[in-house]
Length: 87
Image 1: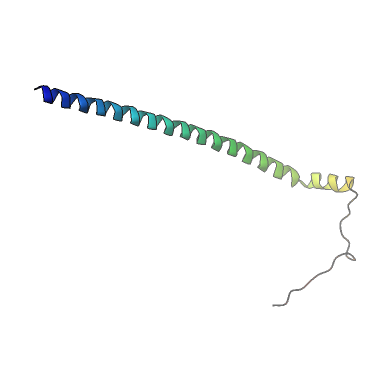
Image 2: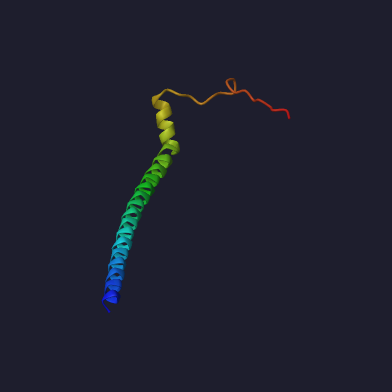
């Protein structure tokens, strides 16, 4: 009976170590998941900011104001050349 108790005790210790190892691995995976979720939220926020900035820069009135400040003029027919591509 003594050998059986020792064997059972060793098996219980191995099981306990396995449980601790699995819990630690699970905790590390959860931490990595939370970091990636935060990174995803940061990227989504940056994407929304970039979309807003693109919409602002594509606004016709904004382009017109900037062109006037830089004294830019639309090209005239004399300045325009049509290039035809032959295939």
